Image (cartoon, rainbow, N blue to C red; front, side, top):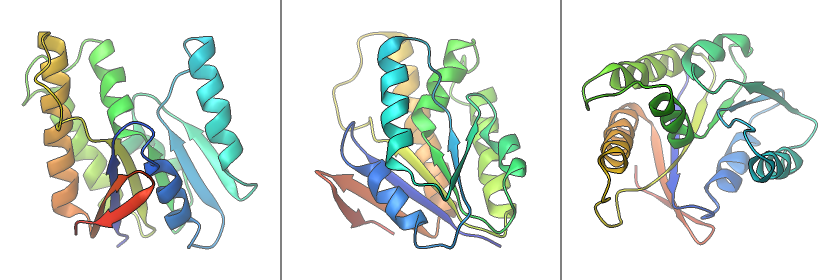
Amino acid sequence: MGEIVLYLGGAKSGKTKAALAHAEGFPPPRFYLATAQSLDGEMASRIRCHQAERGKDWRTIEEPLDPAGAMARAMPEAPVLVDCLTLWLSNLLAIGQGEDRTGPIVARVEALVQAAMARPGPVIIVSNEVGGGLVPMEALGRLFRDLSGLAHQLIAREAGQVFLVTAGLAQRLK
């Protein structure tokens, strides 16, 4: 079976660039599974910038709510880069899932891990590390932080490699 690789880092840390470089070590085609939604002009601009970073050997699958299911649309042996986990968690919270830490979002993260482990090709997951800051004032912010941390633990447990990216430098944790 394929390997799970997790890239964590803060906003604009270079984690997507590092993950893209990792994926480009595999022969094409490569699949970019995008969880972002273009809900405003600023986000549309960010999406265009991310698209420009990828070359012609990338095929994009846009799926803001079900990346586990969307992996089936990629060729089995091809690498799949999921970008990004925390944006996906935000999308799920926005539609009202995840009222507690052991609720439906955790089950969906577990399904993502299972789908990734079942693929013959590698799955590279990019996510924002949000646990190093202050405790959020709002309950929703605390829930998001807690779910993100739990999701990272679930994925890291099964990942063959885990990297923390800071200032464009990837440090191997596992």
